[in-house]
Every structure is written in structure tokens, then in C-alpha cells.
Image 1 (tube, rainbow, N blue to C red):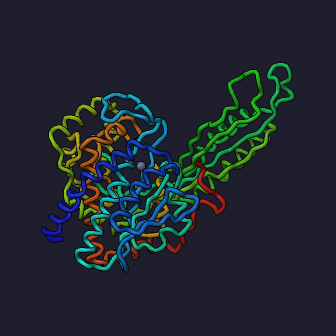
Image 2 (cartoon, rainbow, N blue to C red):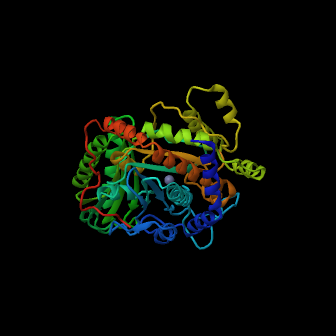
Image 3 (cartoon, protein in one colour):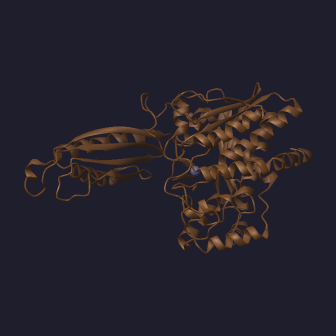
Length: 480
Ligand SMILES: [Zn+2]
């Protein structure tokens, strides 16, 4: 990319930054939860519509999912936008201690207010590029609800929403500027509801059948399963109904929610079947009935390395966010609130992203409180012990995502510190950089569509002849 185009990208994105900062702050204020992000998604969809994008709401039961497109012909570059918040994460903006925000119980602990906004800011800039150059190509923004435990993109994939796009790009707010080049775990979430018989726990215990006992027996059974799972598998549970607060009553109802993860969906499905068997065993032992409700699932994420190389090159060309002295000071103050373990954890992540290559770079990086450099791409295979519904998109089309630094190094995701920093200049600068990285990558794809062909060659190899099969069965719909 020539110097004048790089300068054009900086200028074009900077020109719209004030307007998008407002939108991002508004979405932070709204802090809407999964599948209920009506106002947040509308804010983004409307700003695209006002800019001349054609906006559709393609999935009837996903009222907050939208598709906005501009341009015509190939390549069709897709950008994935998220905008949902986390429950129970209410926090006052900019406070250096944990303090709930009046008027909301929720908060943007994962920075999705920045994620969606930067994607839209990039799309608007890419449209400007297409208009000015008259190039062929389409830019499509996918408004994706419920990344947090809802698998919005998996439902969208099931409905064929991503079928007409050639590549997908996205990013995630974080503490470093680097490619997200790890695979992630596939998962299935399901709830197990036990029905027993209530009775006076002292006067007539022989007449009671305890649903809470069934939950306990199921959890014990699953804990014995753990030794006999693939080593990267994970099983988590939350008791969502204990059957009441009275120990002198035999609990007639109880429920437990399970989240099962493994690197491959086939392993998740086989573990899920074993967990279902354990639930049946628990119901048999306790004389209760069990009903299983499949809640959601998502596929493992397969980063496309070809696209990863392209995005990483643009990140290095555009450069990291430039922070002010006041940003560094703020980052140092937040750092005081992190535990040593949290800082060590984030630095371990940075080390993994940097790889074994550059020792000097790594040593210098460890001293930083803000990520003001782009970490060069390291292509070693990695597995991140988490899940994302971007996984399902990555099965349908070549996909790349990256991190952009929007918070102090050491900030753990899903914490009050992440929510607190969500409206600070650091967050906005990281978001603006993300918009520039996305814009530059899309422009490269429009200028050199051979990248798309190469990405698809790699994609075909990754699939090893398998077709994408949506892990959420038909007939299952989101639980709001
Ligand atoms: Zn997130």
C-alpha cells in the first residue's frame, strides 16, 4: 500500500471519530444483554443506513441481528460487529475502584461497545474508498447479537446469513495489538431440569424424591467423568435452581446448567452424550425425572493464516494507537488495582503472542503499561481455552480477527476494571486503530483479490473435506 493511501486511511477514519465516539459511549450506557440489544444494534444499523448502506434484518427470531451492505460485485468483504454487554457488571465509568453505576445492572466488560462501533466506522470508510475509486466490491456489516453465551453467529450461520460473503474480518478489544491467531474450543450448553416430589423432610421423608439430590448426584457423576475426557476438554456447571431455601422441605424441583467444551465439535458431542447419560443415572438413583434442554453451541474457531498475514501486515503499516502521557498515567493507576496474578496472566498472553523469536522485544514489552506497539505475527499453532461464535463463521468462510489495545496491560476481561475503562481515551484510541486496521485490510482485498483465492485454498485444506454442520439443531431457538 502506498504512502498516500495510508495517509488517506488515517485521515478518513479520524474525520469520523467524534461521531463514532458518541455512538460507542451510548452503547456503553445502554449495556444491553444478549438478544435484547435492540437499541444498540439499531444505533449501528441506523448509522449505516444514514450513510447509504442497505440494511436488512434477516432472521425473524434474532431481532437484533442485521446485515448492512454497500457496493456490488466481488470480492464481498464481511465485517462482524458485536454489541452485547454482560449481566451483573454494572460499573461507574472511569472510577478506579469497584462502584456500581446507578440505573444499570449490566456493563460492557468485554468491550463490545467498541467492537461494533469500530466495525461500522471501518465500513463507512471503506464505502468512501469504493465511491472514490469506483472499484468493484461489496462491503457487508453483519450485526451479530449475543456473543456472550448466546451464540448469535451460530444461529446466523444456520440460517445461511454468511453464505454470500467471501471473507470475514473482525477484531476484539484487549490489552495488546496483535493477531488473534489461536484456535478456540467448540462448546455445547444445556440445562438439566429435575422433577421430584416434595414432602415434609422430617415427618414424611420416605414420600419425598429430591430433585436437589439428583443435581448433586449428577455433578458428582460428571466430576468422575473428568479423568476420562480429552485433556483440553472443559466442563463447567452452575446450579440455576436449588429448589428453594427450606431445608425442612424435600426439593421437588432443581436445575443445573452445563457448558461442555473441547477442541473439536465431535469430542464435545460425545462428551455431551455422556453428560446426558449421567443425568439419566442421577434421575434413576434419586427417583426423579429429568428433562434436558439444549441451550446453544458454537464451533471451534479456525483462524485463516493467509488472511492473518494480510491483516498483520496492515497493522504494522498503520501502526499502534498513539497514547498521550495522561493515558499512561491512567494505565499506571489501573495497574495498581490488578493482582500480581492478573498482570502475570496478561503478560503470559503477550509472551505467547510474541512467540519465541524476539527476546529483546519481549523484554521491552514486559515493561509496558499500555500496548503502544504492534506485536508482529507469530504463526505457531495455539489453542485458547475459551470459545467464540466467530468459530461458526470461520467454518463457512475464511476468517481473521485481531486484538487492538483498548485498556491497560493486565486488565482482565469481564471485570469492573474493563467496564470502567470503556469510555476512556485509551479505549477510543484502540477502537479507532481497529477501524483503521479493518479498513486497510479491506482495501488490500479490493486491490488484490488474489488474497481471497489464496484464503479459500487454505480454507478448503482446513476443512479436510468436511462440510460445515451447524451444532445447534433445527428447532432450537435462543433463550432470552
Ligand atoms: Zn468478547
